[in-house]
Image 1 (cartoon, rainbow, N blue to C red):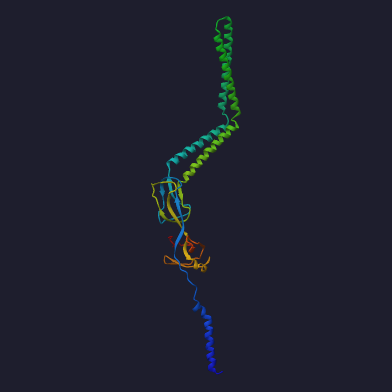
Image 2: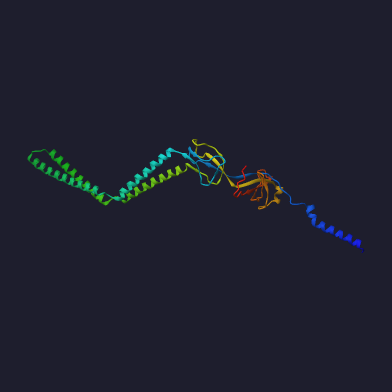
Amino acid sequence: MDKKKIAVLIVILVILAGSFWFWPAYFQGGPEEIRATGTIEATSVDLHAKLAGRIGSLTIKAGDTVKKGQLVAELCRNDLVAQRERDELSVLKSEAGLADLQSGARAHEVKEAEANVNIARANLSRAADDLARLEMLLEEGAVSEVECERARTALEICQYQLQAAEARVSLLMAGSREEVINAAWMEVERNKAILKATDAMLEDLKIYSPIDGLVVSKNFEPGEYIMAGASLATVVNMDDLWIKVYIPTDDLPKVALGQKVTFTGVSRLYAPAFQSLRGPDGNGEYQFFWCHVSTGQENYHQAG
């Protein structure tokens, strides 16, 4: 074989080898691109009033940023303020009554009861003397039977008064019964529970933001009266954004969870990944997926 034929054979082999290596790039094509449009969405929270009342303060406006737990509004309810004062006084009164029962009788109360016993004894002695004198006069015919009967009644009354005075002394010395003290203690606890419930209602007049976010709308102004359940404002968490796009069922085999994608928004390019795939929608023609976007420390996005 001459040199010319050898050279031609080498050229043919080079061409065949090149065709083998570059065939996929030129004839099979690159990865197929799927395009879809969607709306950037975010977690939003409406700040509702738990009770009806007049707005005393509303410290936010649309465009403000708020922190989780930040006080954003407070309602005014003078009736609840007065109710709390009443409930607090009820607690103090019941506590004073319980303390009085637990402390027992005071010294001057015991002395007073003992003095009443002595008085009752003196009255009983005098009534007995009066009855004896009248009975002697009755035998002599100097008085009537009616007067003697009156003296006997007075004597019985004095006896009962002495018994009552002695029972009073015994009661003071024994102290309050256990069941009476327990009843007073339960009354204290009941009044405390009522006060606690009123405090909870007053706390419900304060409205806090449950998340970090951006205020996108404010629906009322200070001084307005609102009903329970009214939404004062809406807060959006700008660090938890995602995109919901619809993909035809024919293209679903070409996507997978965790697959990298790119999208543009506000003149920026982002590279998130598929977070979830869900579907089909109501008409059964499409499957859709949500793509969550974490903004990190930079809030360049706006939901919508």
